[in-house]
Image (cartoon, rainbow, N blue to C red; front, side, top):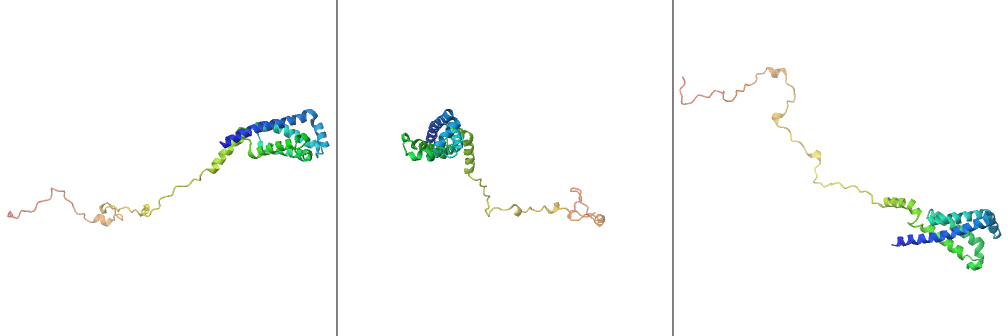
Length: 210
């Protein structure tokens, strides 16, 4: 809620403040131009009057438009605040506060508002947020994301490692001979195995021999 209020307040402040700066910059450009504005700055004691006049005209006119659009607001706010600081130091500081007496009432308010926008930003209703704010929020979300923690494996002592499982040896009759047969084994007589049913029966004890 507080951020939404700031977005709305920043939008209103940017439009009003930018319109004031655009009007002042256009007035300098339209009435006296660069030469007339430089002559006015020189009579007021501003150093390097021609450079200062060109800086003031460009910053007030172009910066006011950028301020309304909400584009490059931190940089534009600092430039406008520096412009008003120069007007305060070289022109209005010696005349007191009230604008009717040539004081710094207007330049102080304009410079403070520009500095506030430079520090707080243009808000979400601006080109700054459309072009740079979403990317910044995504980067901030990645930085604040919790780090990945791999799962901890079960190291309980009851777990038997695979190497401890021994295979049961095969039956003895299935075990192949450890050495190949020799010629001596082939010449030895092998016991004959008669099939069951053909073996002769032993003589009965009660029957006399023939």
